[in-house]
Amino acid sequence: MTDQATRLRQMVGSEGETPPRGGQIPTAISSAQAEAWANVRVIAVTSGKGGVGKTNITVNLAIALKRRGHRVLVIDADLGMANVDVMLGTASRRHLLDLLRPEVKLDDVIVETPHGIQYISGGSGIEKALEYDHAEKLLLQQKLADCAARADLILVDTGAGLGRNVMDFILAADEVLLVTTPEPTSLTDAYAVMKAYSIYAAQKNLRLIINRVYEQKESREVAAKMQRAAEKFLHMPVDCLGYVFEDTAVTKAVRRQTPLIKAEPNTPAARCIDALAEALVTGEEMHVKRGWKGFLQQIFNFST
Image (cartoon, rainbow, N blue to C red; front, side, top):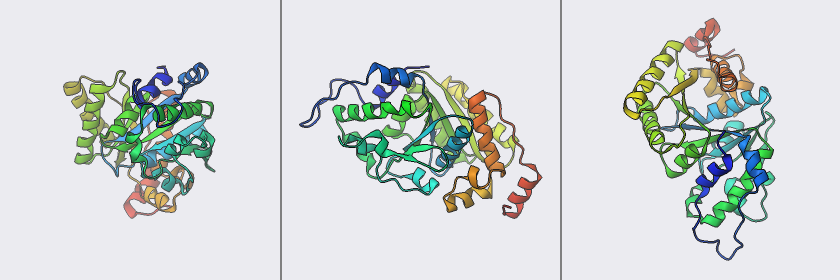
């Protein structure tokens, strides 16, 4: 696995930038921290546009992975939006950039949830991150390095689109899960992310998740279209991790601020997300059918 310490250094800045204003220059992360990072699997979950279900998938996927014995940490890197807080119905007192304050430790920003996962909130005002100098970024790097002691799998919920912050997180991750829907503008924006990734990623490992499909066949058709485009124009292989069915239970769970996989575990979408987790762990192809109950729920717009 690629050295995560190196990846993190790439994300937070390069040498030769301005020292901190009136402060002590932090040292690089320790060799012990670097070794710990090498054993952590970091997956960025991203999308070309907002509103495609990226954060909902991230949170529920984290819970499904926890059930499989993983120690999971979610980092809300959809900067300034605090979407993970909303999905979980929680409120964090501190967020990622509070780590730049000397008195704030990693434990102070990590939120424990009743679902067995931990997360770091993106908070608000975090878009100012680009204004921080190299030493401040290095301090953030040092404190985040200790995440390796708390998790063996880190899911980074990025913002949507191609902003600098988004690309930083995507390029620093071991793997990228690109969430899209069959809707044309979603596919167009997802392709833009694929194109940027194909240009800048040193080691390419991107997989698709097709959200809000009505049947497995639709997912296969959408994935095949994206794969052909990536192969022909980007010369980059793109796999499809799987799909999530359109499901009215998703909206209800979001409104209740309860993860779908906990609130309605037997619904079609929840079973799909559970299968996505299994595919991530085992590498096997997922196969989930909507079933008769799922068919009725979708047609009559109810969940029992």
